[in-house]
Length: 615
Image (tube, rainbow, N blue to C red; front, side, top):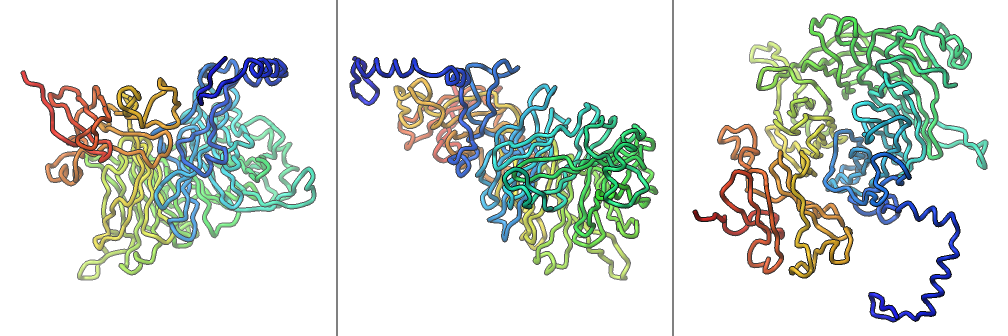
């Protein structure tokens, strides 16, 4: 006789019947049982639930770096590693932000920056070693699809189509390791013929442009290659395929057009930038009023100077090479491009800390803004954004946000100012948000449409921040943010483990439970913070407070930032839930520090006396 967990008894006859039934399993079912089934975030429950349910890809037998005993369950503490894409709505509360988190992406509701969807991991490409990293992403809410460019770290070479959270199709855009995808653009919607049972009908699809840089041309793969030809007609793409396959292999830039729909992903054509064979693309934009045209920025590897070209993706020709930047004597690369609210005007950011406003219609440089770090160096410009809300017009300003590689966000007023005599004074710097993303610098920033809200992410800061500009002096404040450790945690413990030790609420796996209802304490060495992460809902994640107004206090004391006021890294901690309502339930000791500190998990801050051992 065997007693079950619920206390009911099971007869020996029923046991024999179950054993006989188990023996009748087919060989296919036995093979499926060899591979553990990870809990996936793409289920219906996870799609409408929390971001901590990060789905994992299926574990393949014999794959390198994958355990045959354990499979990934949840990923905790990863907020953002840089790329994001805004899905606007009627207002910011209904808008969504698609943010990359390593080899996955998640959807954040902008009203509270809480995740609502998490994707499966991107599939590794053939020959790729190590984990995949998402470098660029685009999402379309009308089709419920997302397109990501990914590959090994700093070398994206593949594009994957997602239907909600499930990967549908993957295309190897770069067949050679010399090529990388430097940007991914949304060119609009098109109609595409359907196949199969719905043959003859049309479906909506998204037209994309993947910009490739540096390397040798791809081998002939059956995809039309459009280059520097003399035919203006669009129907000549397939006819010129044979001629272009033997073209000059010295071109260092390509544009690959992709068509993505709910059913699949296909490569439409390839455009070689042969007319400017020394041009190395870096970034690109699609101006809203320029039909079938994109502006690509980069550098000329012969002169190491900025370069900007206009390409027609329909005819496959490079229409124009901008000459307004040739007068710049500084050797630099174009690192950021952004369309301004004014037609035919774009902002060009460079690797030498300069932002040029140019008129693309007349190829004219309007003015230049220069940035300097406190140490005198010129930080690289990583992102640019324009504010378009009505409150800015009421104040008579035209704000432009500039993200820099040193982690600072500069807000400029593009309205030309004048002195008392009417002489022009140039553009004014409204405010600077120092160390907005440190370490690693700002990766991307973008204003919400028609609202004074600025969303920004960092390269290594592991956070996404929403700034609100509602002050009369035009300074910004943090409205809401999500962040995690900026360095790998050095100490991890369950909160109140063990029912026998009084931790009946949050218990660990040794008590017969799993990781689906645990809270985990972690502390990092470099960021000097103590955090708690929940495996149930990410809204319970928080950082333990070490005092109010640390940033203001650091500025008054003349310190670099608030990290100099934080406690040293935690070397050990212990928790106990007994009488936690009366005093703190967590005690920590710190590196090269004589005191022990008491914390309250309920308050999420220091609580109680500071302990010190006599002697």
